[in-house]
Image 1 (cartoon, rainbow, N blue to C red):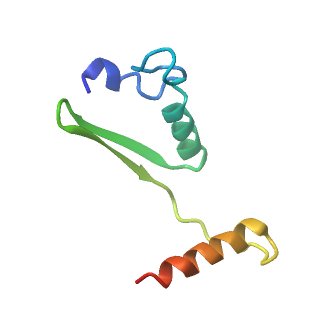
Image 2 (image 1 turned 120 degrees about the horizontal axis):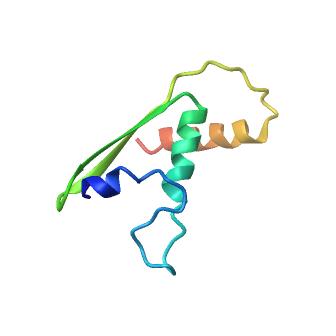
Image 3 (image 1 turned 90 degrees about the vertical axis):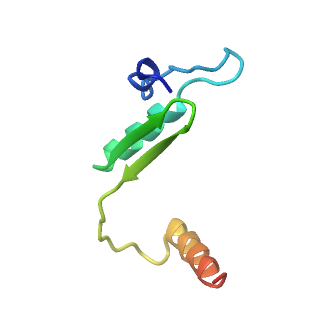
Length: 85
């Protein structure tokens, strides 16, 4: 992508697609989520070659109750991934 596009990537409603192909909210939402979790997002792009997004999030040690549905689902997912190897 060129420099003009890379400068606007995370702006809400910015898109390079046609009016019927997207809202331009995807990257702005990702940016907000990453920043709200004290993370960083970096973009490397070479026009005609490709673009790489690097997301860095801090490690947080928290204890969640085992009854939390999200943690139960995460535990099942991680168990399933471990059994693939």
